[in-house]
Image 1 (cartoon, one colour):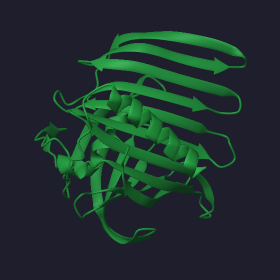
Image 2 (tube, one colour):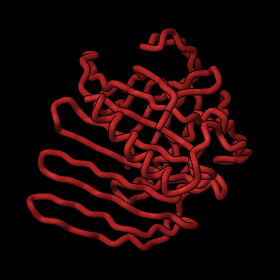
Image 3 (cartoon, helix red, strand yellow):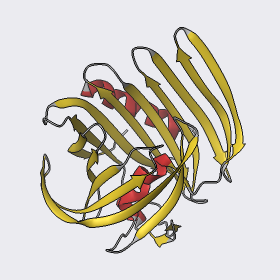
Image 4 (tube, helix red, strand yellow):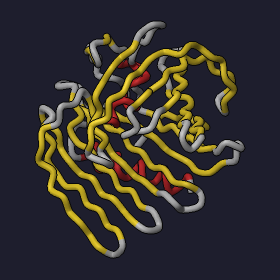
Length: 255
């Protein structure tokens, strides 16, 4: 199964990068603010991270591969995830323009035994244009997207950039995020709960523990981020389904 994930990542990255400039293996020296915070963009690396999903009994129930790479001033992220029982399979790609500091393109394909969802849109100044396609009960519905959203970010940005963000005790960062799978706005807060040393497949890792608390339109997440630079998203916990997503390997991305 992991071979299929890596093949998907390699093929998509090759296509995306071949359409633009040659990929640079380093962050393009970006100095920006995100959510009114100075960020450490060097924490974004060209890397392939593999995660396993565990239920409340610590039984493995799925896997996820998340990869990032630079193409000039564009940061690309690719995500493939699947539950082992076949109930959910999802692939997604995101293109983030570091020159304008804007998520430019989002593509998501999600399938379950009874339905599938395809989202494909471009974003310019919070003007979203594209299509939202739902296949269910052998019927296909296509919803054109052409609307302006009052948002701070797109949900995908949170996970793409969270490891770049310095969060200190007492910080509470409020935001409104567009959730692409629902095309709705979720109100959320990010705050630091504390620090914790946890055991992982990579060894013992000192982490900042951050909460993403939401209004329910997107799920709450408890997130462990490694303290050492370059920082990594080490573990996620989703309280509703009691799902833990834990890193298994981290390797440089190479075409």
